[in-house]
Length: 213
Figure 1 (cartoon, one colour):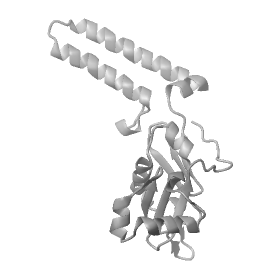
Figure 2 (cartoon, rainbow, N blue to C red; figure 1 turned 90 degrees about the horizontal axis):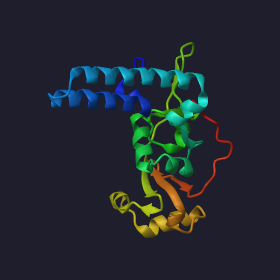
Figure 3 (cartoon, one colour; figure 1 turned 135 degrees about the horizontal axis):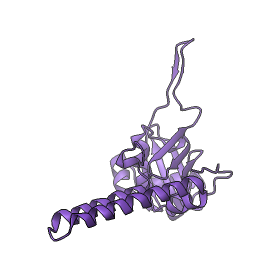
Figure 4 (tube, rainbow, N blue to C red; figure 1 turned 180 degrees about the horizontal axis):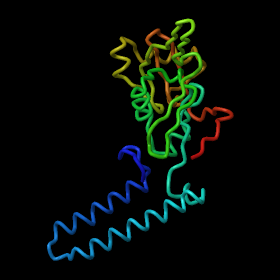
């Protein structure tokens, strides 16, 4: 499995650890189980794991079958609805993972990928990436944050209330952007500067780059 924390382990490797833990736990819990049986079981599991790792390294089809393909969930500032649904993540999951990466505006993301281990990789847009030029001593940083107003067609009434806005205000703001129904919105948010961003359901992001293992 190499030098990786539990949070970095692919699903298959994590399952191997769980099975090993169950075998050892059963041995400890039941004094009638002979230790030799536990040792043999652990050796078989270890050998099987090594064989499968070898197969994964030498055959991409095996690797793809045993682990998740990296999945693009944001491209050019737009959430990819179909891809997010395919991995059973919610918009809240993605937004929370972005915040862990110190990203508070979806529109600032050039590319975000859920890796095979479930972690999020983020490439900020060129305008928002921190750029330091040591020869000139110039540092540019992106800022700001956004508050979700619609998640998967459902209005966040609590957020509207905290902002001092009404549903009528939201409807009018959407109409100004050519959107007539909240149910057609996959994600909508307002930035701290008062700008509205909208991601419609079924909206396609052309030319999403293929991300592989």
